[in-house]
Amino acid sequence: MNARSTGLWVLTGILLVVAAVPPLLVPVYARTTPTLWGFPFFFWFQFLLVIWAAVLTTGAYFLAKEAYRRDRAARGMRNGGSR
Amino acid sequence: MNGVAFGVFLFLFLLVTVMGFAAARWRRAKTMDSLDEWGLGGRGFGTFIAWFLIGGDLYTAYTFIAVPATLFAGSVTGFFAVPYTIIIYPMVFAFLPRLWSVSHRHGYVTPADFVEGRYGSKSLGLAVAATGIVATMPYIALQLVGMQVVLQVLGLQPSSGNWFLKDLPLFIAFLILAAYTYSSGLRAPALIAFVKDTLIYLVIIVAVIYIPHHLGGWGQVFHTVKSNFDSSNAAAAAAGQPATKGVFPATGVGQWAYASLALGSALALFMYPHSVTGALSTRNRGVIRRNAALLPAYSFLLGLLALLGFVAVAAAVKVGNPPNAQLAIPQLMEDQFPSWFAGVAYAAIVIGALVPAAIMSIAAANLWTRNIYKAFINRAATPVQEARQAKLVSLVVKFGALIFVLALNKSFAINLQLLGGVWILQTFPAIVAGLYTRWFHRWALLAGWLASMVYGTWVAYDTPSPTQAHFGSSVHVFPGTHTGIYIAITAFILNVVVAVVGTVVLRALRVPDGVDGTRPEDYVADIGDEGVEPELNPVQPAH
Image (cartoon, rainbow over the protein chains, first blue to last red):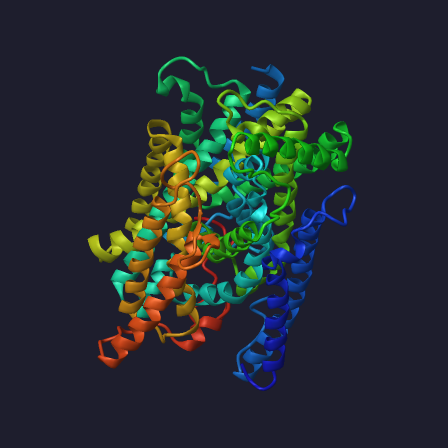
């Protein structure tokens, strides 16, 4: 980690936390209404969380890739091993 | 027995058998006589193959049978598999690339290899390896249970005869699996995983559209389930028993159990040796992170599959007398699908058991070979001897699991798998903390591991359910409260407390801390860096 990558790593961490924490807040989504296409809230909300986490993790992937590239450049190492 | 269903099933089973043996020639290396080749498939799998392999590895046939079975039986807690498999990937994203890098640079094949190298402690490595092996064995056994229920619905299990004749089809299926795992190593499940996952996606997507349509739509399904559960709760209350069924965790107690099961299982999953085997078989550092974003597709699928448990309630599926909820999904498919597609569905589940069973036996064999055989028995073992040892042990592990299921009570395997989850989480501090810091003292980690193993085992043994005196539930009352949480989490807290206190004490006493065989830059190394050469070049012809 260095001055040019710290911000990106922090942002990556935030995305990951925001992806992982909502499923643990069970009281928030343990309810039946509103329903969606006949699915109680409890179920469709968790399906939505799957998509939510996947999107955030994808964002984290691109941020981490750039941060990792900058870290390597700062250490004078060549990039390109990881496509 | 239904001839058409059986014919389709047999065709698909034979197809993967041929693929399993042919896998030895796929992405062929000069020699299969090393653990890098046999046990990690040449460490060369890219994003696409890894997605099938890891997905095929983590989402097992037993999951596909057991999760909907809990919903069928009226306990929505089983749906925790969905939040569990959401939480995993952000965590994996954070720490697995570091394990990948350090393992490649040092040629580590197992998580216990890493712990041994990091802490300079064969005892700590042994503790991690032994935990991995004992936690994996019942998991393999449960894959057999998954196959067994399908064979039963297919009518391939005559009710008469001795245990050997009765389970002959299971025996044959496992013998074939053992043979191609022996010859092809990790390449066999990697190749078969394509078939497994394609079939599973196909079957589940068809099932969640086709079957509820016949039952009046999803709204109608949930409505029927709710009234069914309400009446069964009313009947239980009238008989003076607790009303336990519900379509969502309505009470605080249920919600704590749900969240702690999700968190504990997520922390534990990538401590299982078979998960690590999948992750270490990837080609470069980026494959795991890309897969952390892509693997949630399986979680979505698992959620849909879990709901088929409710669909089975709405379809009034009969699961035998005495009732066996695990028959719910195969029986639902038998009742609702035309027989040829039911055959596809059965094949999907059975092949879904073969892939993880193969990877688990390879992972357990790697652990034995590296952290017990090479660490203590034959310290000068060559790569060829290691590969030979691992191949033989993979057979022993599989037949051990087979005898386990056939000769012992099935509930014994289920109890042990419950314990396995509690146990495997206790290797988390040594492995994951070790990826970031050497602050923990090796003996403190060992003490924390031992304390939490004993405590977790005792609590699990001591937890009753309405139907059994011991191993009744994964959830216990957290000491000093009235809140039920996952046993593994309580044991994990004890583990960390002992490790922290122990480290402070041992440091104060200046107890020797072992030699760290790794350097900080090892944890961020990528393919092409010094010592992280590609171990297999698929274009290179075999000699």
